[in-house]
Image 1 (cartoon, rainbow, N blue to C red):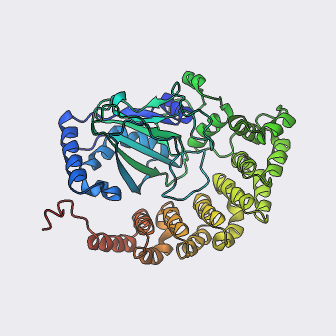
Image 2 (tube, one colour; image 1 turned 120 degrees about the horizontal axis):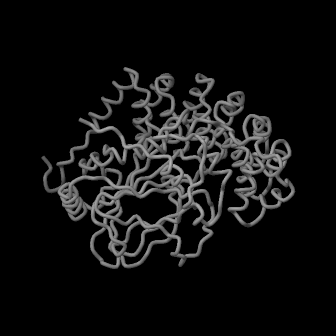
Length: 465
């Protein structure tokens, strides 16, 4: 019988919001991990890295993601109907050198990164991983920084996913991280899986006892304090949209305006959120910066407007007519974060699905799936995206259609065609969308596709039948 998911506590959720990660553990017996390691050793030695076929090649891994601690942590952070992305990777490391600090791309592509937790990653360690074996290192609190504000040799603040077999680290998708040095030179596996939220939060999905935000004591150790951003993220996770709008009108707008376009990114982020909370005067500053020719200033203005509530909608809708691509894309992004408040902008957004700029095109596809209403018009726009010549637009459309359930039934024939696409992620996302749509027609098409492409984990070059 399946155990109930072990949901996170308020304290753990506040730690995740501020630090961007949690190190947790499963309780499988040691024999489970010993068998898993033998399977991994065999696959890597005989066949090489299985890449996206990691799960079907080592199907025992599904037990890991069914574990109450793993499933409960994911449900808490990205909702109960989260999606396991078709990309996954087993990282093998026996190198004595540390890897470079980085944020993961989106399967080789770039997109505007969300401050809200729409995406997460699990990095799972199937063997005992002491510090000397090279666990993943993360820089706490850096999930919302575009720039790397810390030094390459700055290890004082680094957190390591070190522990016994069965340890895993749940991270905000955009946190700065790296592989640390394996000074023992022994095999070290880290199994990376990615997950997407398919539903915007309407209520807390963790073990919530206190709806009011409380900054954890550990946040004092971080590079910078982000009280407004942390509180807004907490509120967003409880189902509120634009919760900090007009709550702090006493701010010095001129000082915040200077910080917004300054070189100190943490201070600029704080300024964006504080301006969003400062009423009409703050919105005016953000609106002006949205048109800034410097991409970073426009992007930060969009983050502020994305949490500024209903009054930001006319500002953002007007920006859709800008001749500056990044202004348009940033306005689109902010409208998506405001979700149902922005439903009046859907007709203009659908017209941008065929825009010549990939940045605009792909941002609008994501945004339509967050606004969702009016559904018929939104689905029609996403079907257009599914037919686009650009691969990223097509696979973004497939992911977007996962967020509608049966309401996206009109897209089913087009998803059926996408199952024959030349790109692996277009096919994978189309299959996922059919699963989430879950009508009888969608299920029949999906089952036929999966039967025809069934993977046999026992078939190898040494054993073909």
